[in-house]
Image 1 (cartoon, one colour):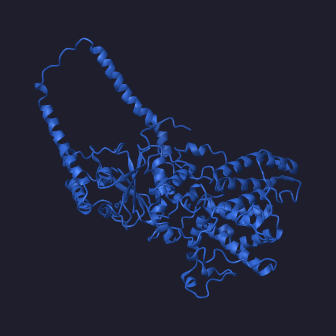
Image 2 (image 1 turned 45 degrees about the vertical axis):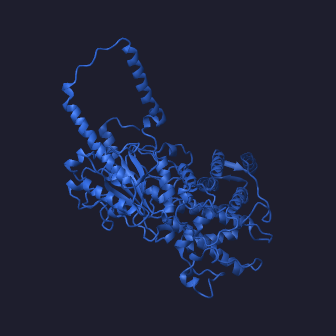
Image 3 (image 1 turned 90 degrees about the vertical axis):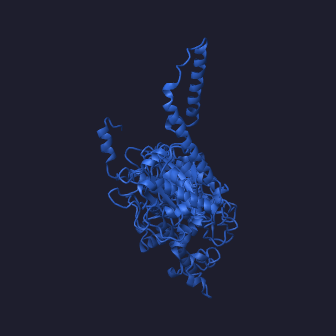
Length: 632
């Protein structure tokens, strides 16, 4: 709905955070005035009972946060506070600078960088300042002599044609940029601007004479990524930051930049950045802005300065960064006209960036000690088991599929349509969900005909090519049950923080209603209640809960089923050494391979291991940060 007056618009803008039901079709809460058109096009949405996501944070391993603990996810600037940054972060720019010393301070910093790097860029800037001042002097002289100039000559014959030609050239010059820059939506996307010693005159104290090839007025906020080239933690965040810089709809309100804290260490230190990666938002705030010296206007400095409004130092997962930006927009620190790309667009851009030379800078943050010889083999197994799950035990208790059981099946298809690692298959499953949802009940014959027309293929036996990780010649080993576990792990790994608990609940309900082994479903129900499956609150809890139950099932089969070989606890020391505590790693006896011992594991590394394992080959936004294209 559109507001008919400014008062109605302001009333809408002042609304508190709306309470909505969490859905897969529109997973992020946005301001009431803005809704992403890309998300509105999604036709599938399934409802969460409660959208409150636990704000509790876990202490993650160095592979997620380098050497620093993750602070609060949404640090939003409070305009009533006296400090610009958190108390532990310090000031961004030299806080003790007097109004008359802004330019002198920037010039001193330029000198320090030149002394360190012995470069030529600073010298070029000095010449630029001199030329600008000389230009101003010439301009002043021209103004003084304006009245001494003789009157213009009268127009000559043929001047009309010349004026017409000039007008046509000017109109063409104005039209071409408009056609090539995205039209009325504003300037083109400008990517990530690489800062150097121009950090001050670009972001903090903009200079009118400094041409950035795009807007840089008081309406523009800057998101600056402070990083080090060799930093492994920076390598995890760099793809999503560059994807945002290349895909956000307009540079009129937000621009993206990065600063190398090795090459330009002085600027990072003066900005109070001592840990990388850090993302900081700079913007103009009239209440917090320091007045500039009168001499600044003469030297070409804009009549405003930017201050740090918020900063991110969170969990090294792409959706954590995205949620931070959305939170800033909700609280008014980013303009409401900024539209964020959808998850698939971001994921594609991230994966493309990872294949570039810049995307491969820095150490890899792999937790896996040794990759499988076939890291993408699980994709074959989860497809086979999903296809089998569509027909196994669906009509075992009744010749008609309707009511609650049909609803549970549709819910399961909804989750798969959002968490399957391959986009093409996600779209196919979404189509199947629509087809099956068109009728209130299905008889077996009509149901099977609908599956065949959709393209359903029932998998072969466990020893056939239908399976790769779960291939086995031994009866009762591998095959469909093994592939289901892989499918469940994959679905949760591709879920984000808000949807992971819902994904787990949907898996549990499907097992209770459609898994053919009644005894297995009963055991899973007991484990759900004993280990409080309903109590998981976020992505990490959900991933480690399913992993723990999976190992407990492996232990039970080892103790109770003599027909199969002993199933060892997973992952092994060879697969993930860091997943075990230092005590176990240094023990001569090693880990307990047949029985579950909770104290032997490091859950934070387990989370990283499972994400890396079941994100291989995935093109979802959640997994794009974990997928390593080099592990083929």
